[in-house]
Image 1: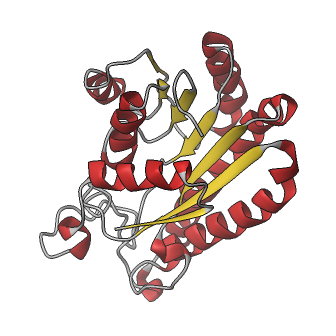
Image 2 (image 1 turned 180 degrees about the vertical axis):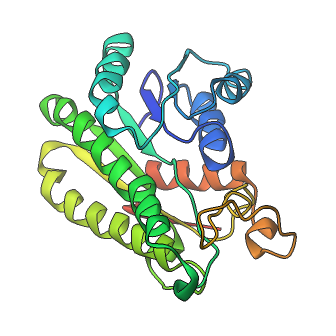
Image 3 (image 1 turned 90 degrees about the horizontal axis):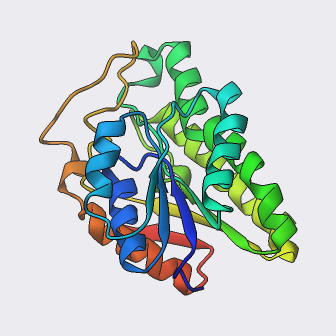
Length: 235
């Protein structure tokens, strides 16, 4: 797999692993489409990427807007070669203390939003018989973990869907990579949802904050893609 001249669309690109991947793919010669909710933060990431970059801010769960956003991305770039579904939120609450709406929010952001965007991007890849999806799941998508029951559920769904999809579309020349990060030092723990839906905030003792850097994680992901590794463990 060669990234030179390829168009890589990254969601959740304003920070963390998404920003690390933007920098990594830029160094590898790819063109970028960077998406997230905050255009100013996306612009800051783009400033560190010495490559052609399109900023395309949107709310991941606005599913009705995604067809138009996808059409715009494809028109402005000529086609998406690699879609990185990275946008996501985590959780820090006991199941007994978690409101149903928190579970719904986790599933919408961490599973339904990337699924829908993939549905919109895949037909052009299949028609070209080339392309790749990179679905950022979690080690929590493999093993259940306390305080993350909804997050684990969403990431298990992501892993299972990715595995099934890979089996279905490999014949069309489209790759599906699923990434299972462990501890990576991003703001995902700080922005995790509490049981009532509020943001947990910073906790220096959260082990995620002691993980590897986002740039280290991005390098492992890109190396795994180059090696054709269907599931890429990180951290």
